[in-house]
Image (cartoon, rainbow, N blue to C red; front, side):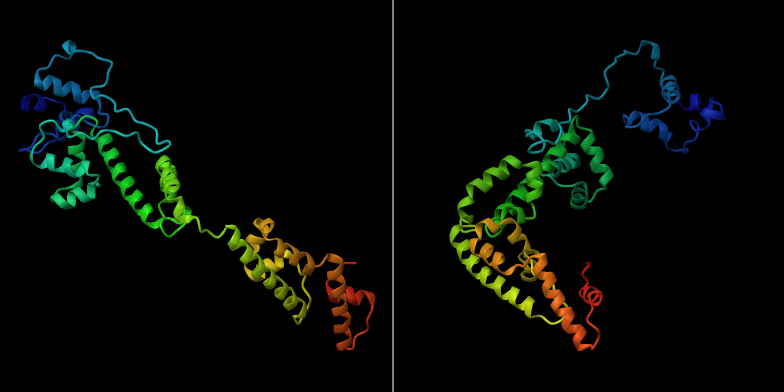
Length: 300
């Protein structure tokens, strides 16, 4: 092969083919022999075949790729379909490659495998790719490992929290929805005493109705320019605006309290004008129609 390479021209496309260390083969030769992952110029294959004495005209032609394509499944529903991660696909691997695959089938990441075995991540990826379909099997193993970890975490957190408050709820909803639904249905009894049952709402209704009346009285008695007393204002003051908007049908006492304390726009304008009149009198200013409306911030 050295004689063939030495006879190559030193210009144009051939210039890179003749460059190689004295004691090592050319890098482009080793890349082609390692079943390259990327495309290479056809000239490299022709030169290498010539150097090896291979007649390209007699090579078997096939439209099928040399490496069987791995069927990829779309991540729908509960994630990837369940695959039987059997060690039979490892064939006769021994030594370090077998150790790499032991950790890979356990769902470890490349960084973890490299750290445990004291090897590079490049070697880990290369070992995985040497097995047909190895990348997909490793991907499935990592998915199952993560799914198991998230399931255990969710079951622990769900004992004291609502389902959507658990940190793994969204991931399980996207990738493992069937299991999530079954888990919630199975442990639903532990969450029967939630805040939306009838007894709790009755107690909440009475307490909140009293707070609404007190809040309305405080707003009316406040110093300064009067403000509109409305359901939105009271809800913001008591930090229950969302409850008053969404659950008011379950709080009849609160609804009655809001009806009694909230004021219309006309009532609010009357109160604001009375305040403006008193303010002008205290400042010893003339009380005119324009002054009243301007002080009350009301457009006539």
